[in-house]
Each structure stands twice: as C-alpha cells, then as structure tokens.
Image 1 (cartoon, rainbow, N blue to C red):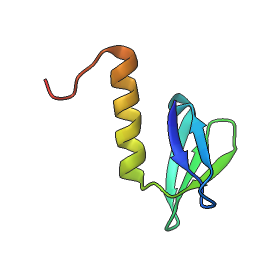
Image 2 (cartoon, one colour):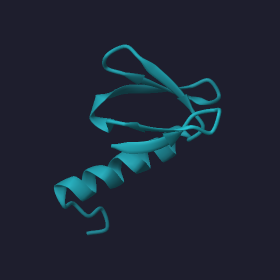
Image 3 (cartoon, helix red, strand yellow):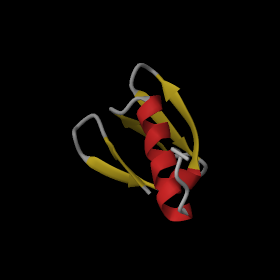
Length: 65
C-alpha cells in the first residue's frame, strides 16, 4: 500500500499491486486494474519509488545491495 496526495490535499492509500498505469496530464492519473482512477500530485517517478520501497519492505528486498 502506498500513500498518495489528491489535488485537494486529501491522502489516499492505494494497493500498488493494482496499479495498471500512470498517465501524466500534467498531474499523475493513476489507473487501477478495476477501471477506477485517481488524480494525484506525486510524479510518476515518486509513485514508482514508493512502490519499490513498499515492495522492498514486504519482500525484505534491499535495492542498495
């Protein structure tokens, strides 16, 4: 699960395993596998970094090895 920020500054926690794609419009539009989407302030790079960090925590993987 990753925490992102909607345009109205509300926080939303998404299951990163269900992210299908991220479109840049110029905000980030996060499209989920169920067809829903979220417009968030974080860049695509930030979303990717948060996903990698989360996956590293749950799978005990360290990217700096």
